[in-house]
Amino acid sequence: MKRQHIVAGNWKMNKSFEEGKDLAEAVAAGLSESDTLAILAPPFIHLSALSMAVQQKLNLRLAAQNCHQENSGAYTGEIAVDMLKSVGVEFVILGHSERREYFGEDEALLAKKVDTVLAAGLKPIFCCGEKLPIREAGTHAQLVADQIKGALFHLSAEDFGKVIIAYEPVWAIGTGVTASPAQAQEMHAVIRKLVAEQYGEAIAEGTSILYGGSVKPANAKELFSQPDVDGGLVGGASLKAQDFLAIIDSF
Image (cartoon, rainbow, N blue to C red; front, top):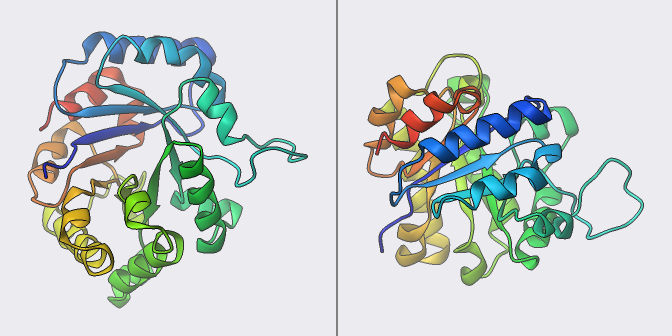
């Protein structure tokens, strides 16, 4: 089974309404038709407007950066999956290190969010990764395994098959430091082996595992050439259309 190549752009808390519209239109205009799926993950204010831009291309989709675990209710400031679905969102980023760090999200909460996203017919992009002290202590593989097991391994094989995993070494996010291609490959292989042990080789071989952490046009081709790296979750470089398009074209 051929795995889907995916490049997702996480805009984080950037871009005004007009800036976001211009960026999305530039990406849509410059995106060549290919087997690589491009995903835009802008702030919530952009999602409705950008649903029109992404419809111009068969290989361009829309993601939200987060969602609430409940379907509706008195949760001021939060957003529900059905709201996201109603404006054309197909993917939801869950478990990003910034959500874990600044908002206290743990595996128990993320498991609920994963269930909510899947129940709505959307697909999670599940983030995992270690901080520098964990990497230096040599326990990074165990930490990532615990994150994946805690939030995802309650799923049926059918539901797990809808999940995209993004490995993001926290020490490489927004720092300009990138895990070497060998380091990225090593962890992606660890993750795929973990999935195979739980769900079997077929599910593992079909699971797209993205690398995130200072992905740029200059390093994307080498990172994406690794056998278990199926694409990238891109932060800063996704805020410039030409850089994001160059990363997409790195396959």
